Length: 202
Image (cartoon, rainbow, N blue to C red; front, side):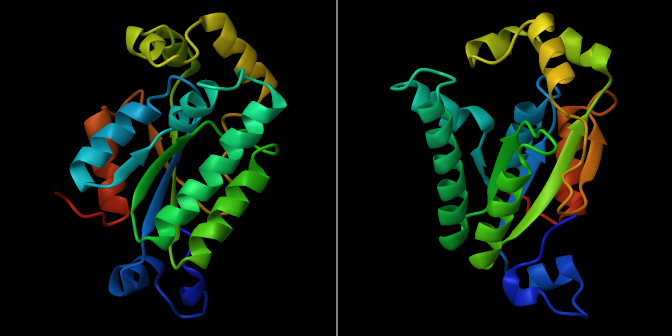
């Protein structure tokens, strides 16, 4: 469920024990479809652990302040800043929680490159897949908190995305901790993540 730092890629290591022993920096990579609760869970986990939160819309909002949303330049810069921020955080020894809407196939190169960059700095990436029933996603998508953040907020937009992209798959590069946010509260999900990956508590 976590990729190993490059220095630990050898037979006989127990991944989490080795990471704990050598103090490997962690990137907690939380992914799932829109409205599944990624940011809510990530905020809970950040408060619980003291990890820095770099959520999906930080880079989007930053680039959108200058460039029109959806243009080639816009997406190129969003992609560039995400990769470089996560690599630099690992280089500086900063543990980070990152949220992302993952599309199987089109996003695999990005995911693989982030893993490579973090591992090259002695870090490890721990994957968390959040999911819930489609009807629950539709119920949540027009929440006021989403509108304030400029997120997708209509059932029709959500349905279009779910139809167009493969948002339910796990990343292939490593196993993921899968959590049903329809049956777990954000607090329970964050607690499960912290326990599984042996994260510190503040």
